[in-house]
Each structure stands twice: as C-alpha cells, then as structure tokens.
Amino acid sequence: MDLILLAVELAFLTLIVAGVALWSPPAAMVLAGVLGVAALERVQAERKKTRKGAGR
Image 1 (tube, one colour):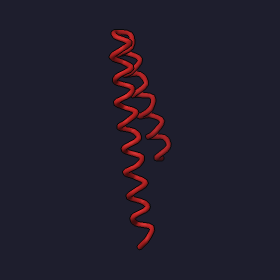
Image 2 (cartoon, rainbow, N blue to C red):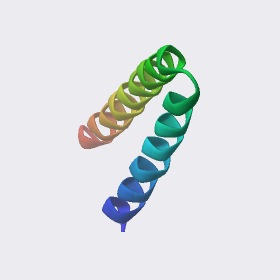
Image 3 (cartoon, helix red, strand yellow):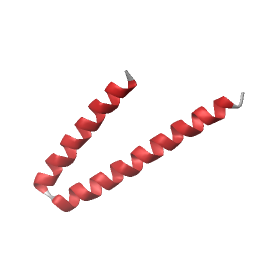
Image 4 (spheres, rainbow, N blue to C red):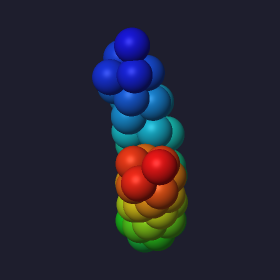
C-alpha cells in the first residue's frame, strides 16, 4: 500500500513540475530542487524514527 501511494505521489509531482516547465523552465528546475530536498528530509526523518524505535 505504501508503495502505491508513493508512486501516485511521484506521478502527481512529476506532472506539476512538467506543467511548470512548460511555463518557465528555470522555475521548474528550482521547484524540482526544492521538492528533492523535501523528499530527502522526509526519508531521513523516517529513518531516524525507525532507528530510534529499534533500540527499545
């Protein structure tokens, strides 16, 4: 289930970035960078949460 939601989220964000790229390619590059940083922060937060609970 988590994998399906991740795929839907990825497709949605790809369409948003593609739409912005039609209007302004530099803005799409900035948006993609921001979304990439947000995604990495999200993954790191999940890893810290699971690692914290593993020691108990």
